[in-house]
Length: 308
Ligand code: HSE
Image (cartoon, rainbow, N blue to C red; front, top):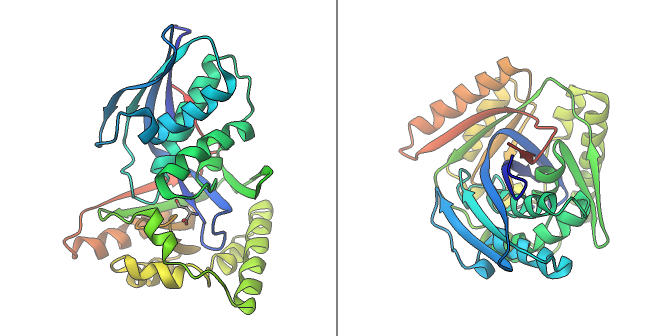
């Protein structure tokens, strides 16, 4: 094994998870980027290879580069790093493409330096990448990509991340219609204020959803997976959203909602059988639209980013 080089799988994630805008996230198993991080004598951070999608090679303009640079400037190691990115997650897909890149670079560099930082500290640097990508330093994709499982960003300043357990039999079915929704735009369209009654409904749902994960209470999970604040605004950007939601719930999804800022749509399901039925329904609806799409069925990935 070359101790100056590390190859990683950096997973896709679902942020918000219906009721938890900017605080809740979950980690997917089957989709993610591959990255190679290499320690070299020449100082600085360089992006040396990008495959899959066209992204900037300039360190300051690349999400992985910016995150790595923030960490590098603080740690000031006596070496440099090269980053290779095999991008499998399409930027703008709503499944944490930028977070996966940012997490891979900071996790890899930290590992090659002998792990001086913990995952919460790494989150702080990876958030610089999110700021570049979307104009806001949210951590609800970064946290699950780093920690795995479900995470709750209790606070951004000071940074506090809680890991939430999840039942073994919980699956995610996720469809990615191949249209792009820029996070910055879908954030800008959100109202600045919310009605008190909506806030009450929402925080009750977040609390009860977390409780349902701790207790494997699927009926409670189903009653909690609602969003009265964000979904009414953003769902309009996603073609056939209402139909997908209605039909996936009809075949037994616990909840269906927008993944992050969209356009991906996810359903949480009890058991693989229901997850596959939901997949069939999603496929059927989108097959008739002329819009290309991918669908994945995934368990909850409890490990997060990992060395390959
Ligand atoms: N919580 C963020 C949003 C996630 O919904 O804007 C974006 O990936």
